[in-house]
Length: 360
Image (cartoon, rainbow, N blue to C red; front, side, top):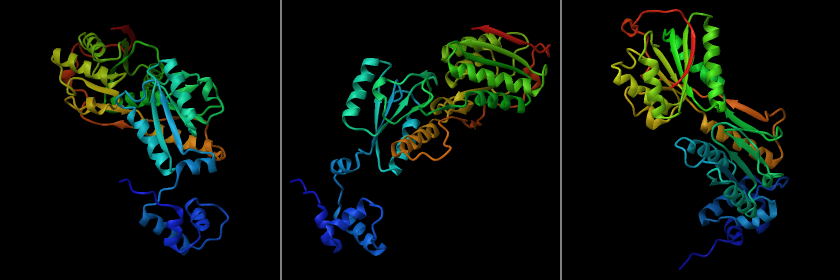
């Protein structure tokens, strides 16, 4: 037999106060002169009896459901996007709210249907997430609802958004290799000109230029952004004369392919060639040998920033001067794939620095 729900009258009786006082305390009604001792008795009684407020009644009173949603194209199916959800959930927990997660699979019909269902449930706001850090246009159904874009920018400048700082990430990757003493470098970039590819290359080359014009030999080539693309690009860039001693890969999956190419060419990592990845996909970076030095994408931090901003919008009390948009820098995760270049890693000797580009 199901246990009956504890009522506010029972809490009031246990605490020795009126039901009005219990309501004021549990709902934190401002402007009420209630002593700290009385508040403590009410909370203790509610906790002892297992009282849970009626969410529907509270939503009718406050005009809020204390729920938000994450709507994304593939946000629930990627190996690292769970950290975005975790960051948002941690903030929602502190705000006494819950998070619904909807994955649309890039289908506009699914997206429209799911958003319609969420609106029927009177959600308070939406985190609209997208992969590849691209620019997105919000669905018309979200017009007028507090919304923050995550992992992408938005065509509507009034909508807050957060993305990774891709240029800084590329610069940090270059710094890892330069600081280790490497002066012959390669960047294996994504063949698709997505914002992440453009930003990482810009930061990588800018850091090398800032290091000193003509002091570093740079090869840039593109490939499919997976292990197979990294493998073929690795064979191309590591198999020739004057090969680089340090390689930066667009992502960890490409780096895994470069590892395979290096081993087939008889090269040791990091003795003969150092490798830096991007993303910090733990099952790759910690799972290959030697473990991969990589740039972490700040997914948790983006989820938390976006949720905080969303709750500010919901409450209409955003801090004065709060940034409507931001780019967050991810940390370098140092592991074992980078070391100073050795004399054995210089077949063909030094040659004139150049900037070479190609496709794998």
